Length: 486
Ligand SMILES: O=C(O)[C@H]1O[C@H](OP(=O)(O)OP(=O)(O)OC[C@H]2O[C@@H](n3ccc(=O)[nH]c3=O)[C@H](O)[C@@H]2O)[C@H](O)[C@@H](O)[C@H]1O
Image (cartoon, rainbow, N blue to C red; front, side, top):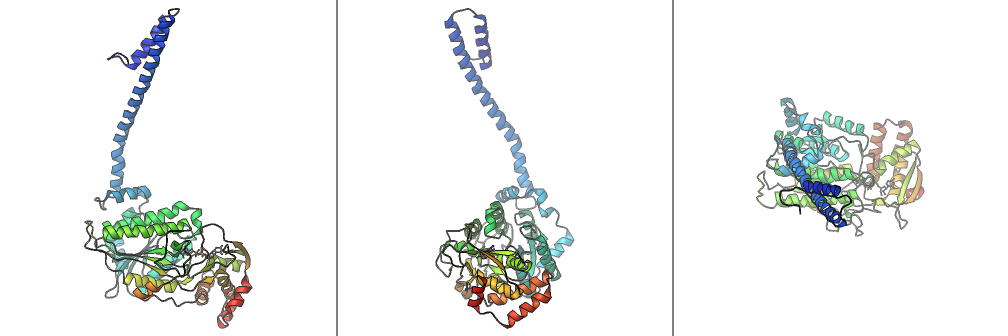
């Protein structure tokens, strides 16, 4: 130890001087001197480390309030009582990317209120997220048509052709439904919307869809299906007054590696086969938490491969139709045991009825902004499927008939990419609780899809329409068509 009052720097300097002056002197003195030098150096290092740490702490303390104030600044005008929601928001959104700054003013508020206002007695007022998506568009149209109020939001991302989403937005606008360009992670905008319009319900359909794409872009699934869901629940639980009831899109994929069929809500869902499925399963667990703590009324709907007009171009029936028309090859996945992959393809109109039934029977939330709940609120989950799985090869055969063109098939064993060999819904709970009864066969549903597809993409109707009407007149014999297509 250096004598008290002498710094390590002093001691080191002294040791150096001693050694310098002792040139040619005793070895003992040199050894003692170098020992002192080592000791002094280690003390020097120790003190320098302490000083550096103190400096870092000082700098952090100087900057920390500004980090905090940024979070709280982001929540300005929102609910300052919930710093957690503010920091969540600052994680995903910067203040400049919040659409709240670009929306507002008397005219905008008036427009939101107009769109949100029901036109029938007893109508509901619904905030539809993912409103320019496939299911979102159809549900928004159906709600509006029966006299409910609807405000939509959508982030118009480019997962698939955004021009299709813009066309859906234009269709909705023509029916008096506003769809805002906004992200569900934009808590500020969600709060603003709830300040302007007293939504009784949220139909939360915004999500990152697609089973196989999850291997390419895993983070987008977490951002939309987990963080985005939390963002919606946060605002509904802590800001909306009164709290709305929430109906949201889960997925048949939560059944994952379950082999019991038909899939019932009571079956295991703890073996998801894809990250997409895992994020939907996580959503169901998160729903339980928000229901339990905040008294939010929450209904999860497990959709089974929904298809139809205005559908999603990333789904097989849609891009197969495109490829067939273009004369390009399609790849069909076959299960590892050699059987055809099968899906419980569910027509959009049936799903829309299920969504509206779920909204109508949702039951009220029991919590309040103050954080107290008056009692338990409903927490429900339902399958919305068609109850009759069809081999994908059969789906292709129907498309070929409707489009009047054979496909060029390549059949491969299902890659290990999150896909599951079959899905099959038991819908008895949805039937019991809100009268859900799917009525559309795959043949009829795909005919509606192809009609729209031909019209929307302005295909050569001379060839395609003739083929479709003859297919409609003579329904294909199921087994022969399936064999011909494989
Ligand atoms: O119910 C759901 O919860 C999910 O449904 C949908 O997933 P899936 O049922 O997998 O639909 P989709 O991709 O159309 O493949 C259909 C069939 O074609 C087979 N398939 C697919 C691609 C291909 O190139 N070849 C092929 O044979 C494939 O093996 C499968 O058998 C939604 O996309 C998803 O977002 C989610 O909502």
